Length: 472
Ligand SMILES: O=C(O)CCC(=O)C(=O)O
Ligand SMILES: [Fe+2]
Image (tube, rainbow, N blue to C red):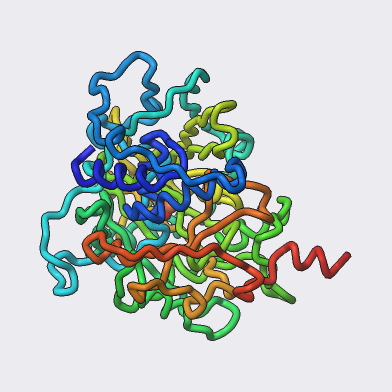
């Protein structure tokens, strides 16, 4: 761990009511963008039920944290997962990576709005945590190679060959072409400017498909990673065509599933349960480009969102790993599930996936299969194999989470909405927090803003629970 991070861990530990493992602290720090007070508040709030009323708050001795920890690993140290093939120097702490949910316009380091500082690849900043010692046996990663296995083990479904082959090919070519102009997201983490190890872009649909509301373009225009962006492009003709097919598949799949009480239920008449009004696209060129474990911010998506992720081009592995709730941490261990995503497949991350699981595209070891398009780029042209994977995540920004309703912190930047993953409950009484996002751009210096989401007080909904309540 670098010195800055050491100091943050120490600071956070000094604010805790009871001792926590270094990994738990690091986890919370990453979740709160390196803000020790917000991280400590989160860890302390997990303790509330265990605390005895009237008992004096105990501060952890700073010295005990500053003392160097034993440097050599013992056999008991559980090193997280040997699972997905990830080079050891670039391994992220399992399940912790504040990679943002949607990836709008690239942030340009040369822009006058960003301070000129050395940029570090995100993968090099986060170190492998010392995992809590546990007696529970480590679970080897599990390869989920069929849609049935994916549905059995994860809150996701996998759909093969979703687009007509020619459309999939055309969309692949056009996105690869466009991706030459995309950039890598940059943000501040632990007082360092880090950048994502893949290129990314964000699109807003011209309308939400139902009315002429353009506020989603506004949402994307203004804030991303605590930074103002330009107006995003609208969907291309191929993206629109793909999107209508994806919407049909998603709604069909949702109609077969039980819905969670906090899910959006505002669709009336012909308005479907789910529609895509924005899309984030990623281009992974070659085997080393990746995205670390993260769950998507829920700022505009709201609780129990559904995200549809289209894969085009080279096949890559999608990793999913459950975040074990605190109270179950001694009784069961997380397992990593690896899902190979072929060209023209759709992965639907269903409601509860962002609350319970983190996901990643790890760097690929052991070689990459080149993608050989079925059609040439232009009629009569030659077919060139490609080492790129294009991912388009179609998302539904909820009307009750419109940008104007996002609380702002003391930095005067819209906050981000995060689930309390360590205390995931039942889809009804789960906790979420609005937290400061200013530090992601302001050299890592944010404020301490932290506010629980209160659906009723904030006038949000309707959600599935409201529908059930009125119909019974
Ligand atoms: O490339 C993928 O499949 C995942 C992308 C992702 O997780 C994201 O954009 O949030
Ligand atoms: Fe994601």
